[in-house]
Every structure is written in C-alpha cells, then in structure tokens.
Image (tube, rainbow, N blue to C red):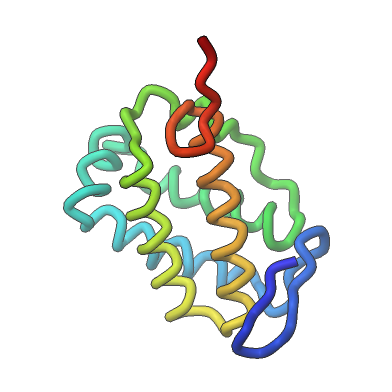
Length: 141
C-alpha cells in the first residue's frame, strides 16, 4: 500500500487507485515529461533517444501508468530493454524521481501523489537493479 501521511489513508497497490482517472494520468504524464525534456540533465537523453517519437512515447507512458494505477493492462512494453544502453546513472534516476515527485505533488491529491511516488520509486529501483547500476545492483564476478 502507498500511505499518505497527509490524509492517513492508504491506496492498495493491487487494486485500481482510488481518485485516479485517465485524465489525471494524462495530465501527470504530460506535465512531468514537459519538465523532463526541458531539464538540463535529463532533456538531452530524451531528445537523443526519442527524436521524432515524442508523442508515441507520451502515449506509451500514459498506457504504462494506466496499467499501474488503474490495472488496465494496456502497457505491453519492456522497460528494462527500453532503458538498456542509455548510460544511465543513479544520479539521473534521482533527478527523474525528484521531478516526478514534485509534479505528482502539484497535480494530485496527497494520497494519490503518494501512490504515484511510491510506484515510481519501486520502478526506478527495479530498473536500476536490472540495468546493473545503483546501490542494490547485483555485482557478479
């Protein structure tokens, strides 16, 4: 469960998140990625990788978050493969999470923001482990 200290409520992670709509997800994704593309650290990575495919990426991210928050099952991508070879660092993930958390807290009610931030942190941790970076990455001989 994602817990919101502000409201004392928790949103179960295994069921659709209360208070989340497709419209909210779209606003969150569009606002967040607008900030990412303008960010001096993250923007160049996204410009390089997504040149000419930006609208397709935004639609994919709406599907991704819809699958997570509303259990729609629309996202069929492979996040590990999509991020492999991008020379990502733990610091870039921290920057991504900082922008995401700021955006979620501005757009969403506190308990909904807590849900999205919790999921984003878990996803970032999983991606870093899978990509072999960060403090929890497996270091095999």
